[in-house]
Structures are given as structure tokens and as C-alpha cells.
Image (cartoon, helix red, strand yellow):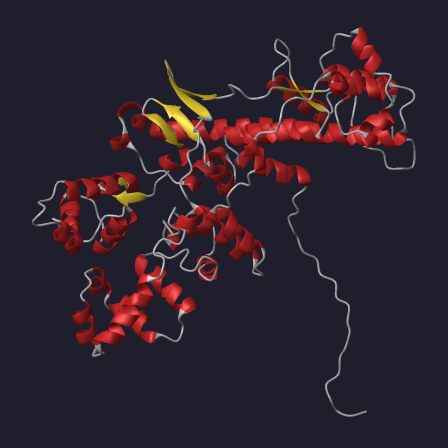
Length: 509
């Protein structure tokens, strides 16, 4: 044979640890991230898909009681179980065990002649030939589905970027850092936290955060995850016009002149013909300085607080808002179905599977409630002065700090506060708005970044319109007040609040 390249096959063994999310854990994570309105919608959908779940009639046990009983069952405090057998023996729960099991988890239903007649129906026909509830025969179907049920939910920027990240091959550390970056994008698609803060808040390696940022900045829409307007425009130019160097020069070196529409000065500084500069500027004007806005279109929506911070003699206490939430139970109708002697093995296996899913949902709903309560209690311990006195007393608070106190991963805290609102003495406020990084304040203590931005905004609102403050002057005033901040940071905070530059404010005046 010739001396060409040869292919060799080999078999190698490798031992590695890998976290695998079970369906129950996946559901637990998704349930925690839901706000009250979303959770109510999810429960209603589950009741449609899982016939074992029923809404609890008034004057019966609460969801907490049902979930507590379900947890006792899972931990072995009850003698019954719902596990399907291993196939070596009859995998049906004994009839006596079913009686004990359902006594623990289901309210006894009052029997009526109508219900007795319904129980005579064939189980196989009900489960596999007819998807409607057994008592639907006796009701008129007159309600038309609402039009809203046919409308699809718009894709959010977070979902869109998360989907792209899930399709990207990268190291697990980079993927986790990417999730943190996506979670720190503002409504315009800009990165609202520094790479150092992201690395610290999620225990990410700095190099993983940098790789994740470079990765996400290649995602659609172009310009997403930029740290300022200049970087946003440059990312778009590299994607949309990679061969056009003049627009990139203008954005890189003469953005201030561009903001003032001083095209002749730009042409003179770059020693380029004015028509060429005008064509380059026309290209720049077609770029999108707010790439995230298209995924955050304003839609009127109802805000319903998930929790309330209620003043008591000992401070504040957390109350979970469960008004209007469906209270769940396990269907007593299915108990009688499973206890029937004529039930086939296939049907009984199906029903047990539905019971397992129902119990898992009840457990996850209760776990969500407990996690949100613990996170909110930690928030109250840090922000009691804010609750008493208002925004000027908001303290710096990082997600990582709360996670360490509660004893969970920072991503768990992030999900627990995401898109959720609290009713407080200061009004209804988004829980995530209570988190803010620290800036060195007077006497070396920490000042909330939220309050720092409010202070910058107040200075600009009170400035003389004929002589607006420069970023350097604002920086000097802040330092005189004992707040250590750089001019670059002040400029970034001003841009985050969409406040025009000094030149633009002077022109408007």
C-alpha cells in the first residue's frame, strides 16, 4: 500500500460528571420564573391537558394542604405510592392501597344518581376514544373560544437570544455566562452591567464572560449586547457593510461631530470629499441604535403583584398574593375509575402517570411559593429603610448576596424576581428594580447605582438651559459630594437614561 494518510479507529473510555435535568426539575425551573398571571394561565392549561387535576370547590382544602400531603406521600410518610412497577410483576397498585392513597389526596365527593350513571361508562372509551370530560355530555357547549386564545405571544429579546445561544456550540462555562449577559440586557438591547459585575454575580470566569459577550454580539439583531452607542453601530457596520471603512471611521473617531450633524468638520478631519462623507452618514442613519426595541414593543398589560410587603409590629412580613389563583385537587372521579375491577392494565397505567404529573406540578407550585417568600424576606432585611422612607434610601443589593443568604444559586434568585411585582408602602414596584450595584459614596459607604442615576438626572434638570452641564462638571459635583465616579461612567449613565449630550441640550435650549 502507498504511504498516504491512514485512518485508525479506537475506543476510549471517559468518566465525567454531567448535570442532567429531569422533567420535574425542568418544570420546577420554568414554574419559578412565571409571574402570577403566567402561573394562572399555566395551571389552567394543565387542567385542560391533565384530567386528574381539578379546581378545588370552595370550603375544601387549599392548595397548600394538597401540596403538603403530596410531599408527605413522596417522602414516604404515607403508605401508598404512584410509581409504575418494573414490569416483572403486576404494576398495578393494590385496590386497598388506592383507597388509602386517595383518602390522603382527594376530597370525598358527594355521590348523586347522575354521577353513579357516569361511572358506568367504559373507561377505555373515555380515555382513548373521547377526550372530553365524562360529564360534558350533560352540558350544553355554547361558549365560543375567545379570539385571544388564537393569538401567539410575541417573542421577547431574551427568548430570541436564548434560543440562538441554545443552538450554538460552546463550552458550558461560556453558555452560563451567556445566560447572565442576556439577563442583563436592557429594553434597548444594551448590556447594562460591566463584565466584572457579571462575572462576580454568577461566579463566572472572566475569560468565559468575554467569550460569551463576543458570541452574543454576533447574534441577531445586529448590535445587540453592545455597551454603548458607538459599539452598537460598529457591530452593525461590520455585519451590514464590512467593506465600507469610512462609516466605521466616522463612528469610531467622530461620533460627537456626527451627533451635531457637522459633516463639513468630519470631511475636513478625515480629509475626505464631502459627498463621500454624506453617503457614509446616510448609511449610518439606516442603522438601529436600539436593536432590542423591536422585541419590546409596548403592549398594555395588567400588573398583578405576586407578593405584598406588609408592615407589622416586628417589621415587615411577606404575603404571597393568591387571590384568584385556581386551588387544585386530584380528581375523585378517577379514584372510582381506578378502583373499578373492570379497569384494564393499560388504562390504569395511564391514569397513574397522570397522577404522578399532577403531584409533581403541585410540588413545584409550592416550591415556587416558598422560594419567592425566602428571597423576599432577604430583600426586606436589606431594604427596610427604603420601604419606610422611599427611593433615596434604596441600598445597593446584588443578586449574588441574596443568593448566598438564601442558600441557592444566583440564577434561582434571578428567576424568583423576574417579571414579578411587590405591593409595598412605596407603591407597586418590580422586584428586580430593588437590586442595584454599589458605587463608592461618602465616607466610603456604598451608594445605590439607581440613586446615583437619579442624582445625575436631577442635576441636569436643574441646570441653566443656556449653559448645560458637561459630563466632566457633573463628575466634579459628584466627587465633591463624596461619590467616587469617573466621567466615562457619568456619560454611560446619562446615555442609559436617554439624556442628550451637552451640545444637544444647548441646541434644544
